[in-house]
Length: 408
Picture 1 (cartoon, rainbow, N blue to C red):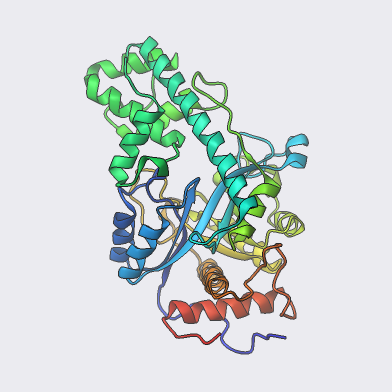
Picture 2 (picture 1 turned 60 degrees about the horizontal axis):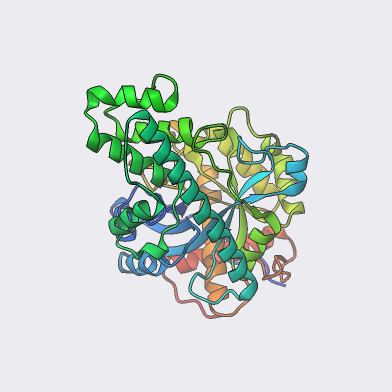
């Protein structure tokens, strides 16, 4: 049996910036290219950065090459919207406050460059096709609705894809549109064609109500287009075709990753019932075979971050933190709580530990060795208990982040 007698992965002295959840183009992102995302992370002193894109991972090689050149250790992730049927049938909201049974799910430490096999490829292809079809329908509805309100455009999903691809410097086929891409395209058309003193009238006709966002603020207008036109019950809404939970987990595992639960916590008000009790949430995740969790602390109060971190770690769940960077807002790579309140020392140490676990898992699986979980989702059995397992993987990950040569 392995033990935790050696190093424990304890955070090194000083402030080490690690971030396991960042979206880069062609996903909607605060950055123009993967290289500009890495350049910003380097300038802030980040040591580990994890990409976590939806739908297509072909940009991951560019991300990895830029990270290595900048002295940043890249970790690779996936993100999905799934549906958990028993929770949906019971009307329980999980980590999507608008849709019972909808669960955002991530994969951490995946291998984006290998062949995940026929089953995973089929799941990924089906999910991508559903998202492409949804974007096509939604773009058409937006175009027609804005035309009726006095903003005539030729925008369709193909034109928006081409613009996203050109900005990111990627082929069109790498792009799967998200709501934010489409909201930005129509906002830009509005600002290009309509003077500021006339925008409010067009938006009022489109919304059926007076706009709240300042008509000179592109980011605010994009947000209001999404909330007023693209959400459930709105004129351009098209229901998402979510992956089944089991299929999403299988795709992560077949990609050599660790299924991870992104926790919304008090980022929703009220907190989603599935997450209402940190201890009960941790138990539910373990029962569903999820042994890693993640927070985006920027949407949470410090006391909430600490409560969920304690509950996860006590249940033997490794926990990490990210920033998403999935809006145009310029925020730091270093995760902080809502209102830019710094993380507690305990939370920062836990996030460092969880990041080290991902680094170790990714490294071991790339070498053909057993990782934190196997392709069946079974936790590595070479340990006396959950704590010993986390500590051993964290110790190995800390050595790898420190640049040590590790004999396997």
